[in-house]
Length: 323
Image (cartoon, helix red, strand yellow):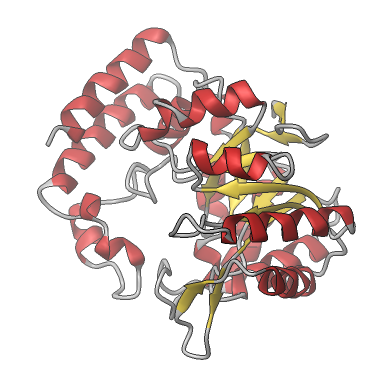
């Protein structure tokens, strides 16, 4: 599997990495619904067997549970240890209600908690999950604390997630930003205008999430399945999974399916390959909830789309995203 250098780091990461958001299970406000740990462990191990070399999670996924599952999976893995990426600043209370905390004290505490749950002595990439909602100095406080954790050897590299160019510049004034993690898919392309060109110019790696639009473009979503998502699945609140947009999105999936059939690939792999066609993308985060799903998507980086196929996909997407 092809690897690319991540930003200013010495990490060579495969084009596709394993995303562990859904592995946190249900019962919290941004869940994907119930999830069996045995399936999660099998999915991670199958992805590693297929050659991926990094796993992306966050403390808040399942309010700590995703990190625990990742820690167990890596501990059980007999091969070379994959890179472990996680995130901070989203905390929770005893009712599992999520709230941001950008204070230095919280970040230091969160890092220690993540190291314990992940059963590791160092986090390879520690990311600020979201920037502060205001323009105050909490961004600088948080980034300074993360830089200090890097200097202390608790984390190898520090990055950001969901940042715009101005926010990355503010962080860069304190310490170099290794990477940014924004959403990017054929139906969500806002980062192409400014964020991707800026990151490429600044030498900031980009590891994008939701290349299959949270499963919408995977080929496994249907009208019936969208209507029967568990009530604690955050996608029930996403307008892309409801009419009038859902049917158009599913029509786009059928176009992706036709393109994929020419290569013996599924629509989800085509959606991922479309993201990776952009040279500003270092890698993409791809989730799987069992070993079978991992088989279907983790080698999408090997699929190279022809120029005509890219144009075909983008024409179909333009119709799907027309409002």
